[in-house]
Image (cartoon, rainbow, N blue to C red):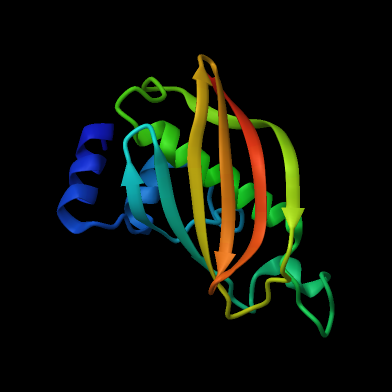
Length: 157
């Protein structure tokens, strides 16, 4: 599916579901942390959702009897949302390339995330100097910020 076709689906439906997300991201279960895209502004920001379920594999060891979403998973969710923004933007990543996380700064984890929580993941473009992108992101649960970070991503073949 082409970038313009996926953008047209978003414009028509106002949402991208798993099928379209799988066309954008190279990630697959159990390492896909975006369930839906609910907001998109070309070259500006993306808003995604992730519902945390009790059967996710990392909860077996993090922590037995008290499952808590690992902070690095939240950071990866921000990186995947950044990849969606870069892939869908009109002046985004060229066909055949993808975006990989190359840096993270000012990371703050402010709220524990547990099964049943719905994450609202928002990533905004700060600066783009090809092949490097700098983005700011935050994850909100309800009305509380669970995680925020500035991330750097690079376009790769």
